[in-house]
Amino acid sequence: MIFRYTSALFLFLASTAALVAQNVDLPEVRSSRQTEGLYENQPQLVAITGANVVRFPGDEPNVETVLIRNDRIENIGAGLAIPAGARTIDAAGRFLY
Image 1 (cartoon, rainbow, N blue to C red):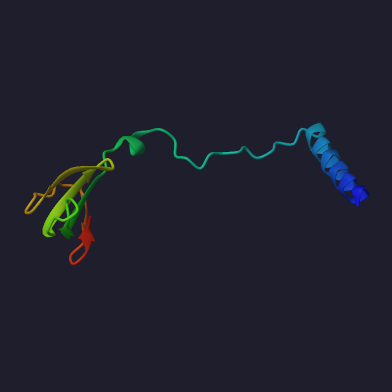
Image 2: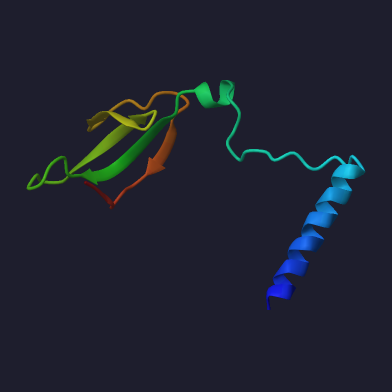
């Protein structure tokens, strides 16, 4: 049993040493995170429209619009004007707590 693991380790180390000795270019490890730039710095604006919004426990649900900018609630209200360029989500008949 030990011989099997030892031989596998030896083969791995020998093949790695052979690649290094041959000066083979190994693939570069890249991060899956996007690079810094304009795309990340653009403000994100989402408008959730027509949802039954419950603002706090015990509150009656009201049909309202919720504006979210950069992952933070910016405004909640009925009849809010949706800014240009906002991603709109129709939540008619759904509840937001």
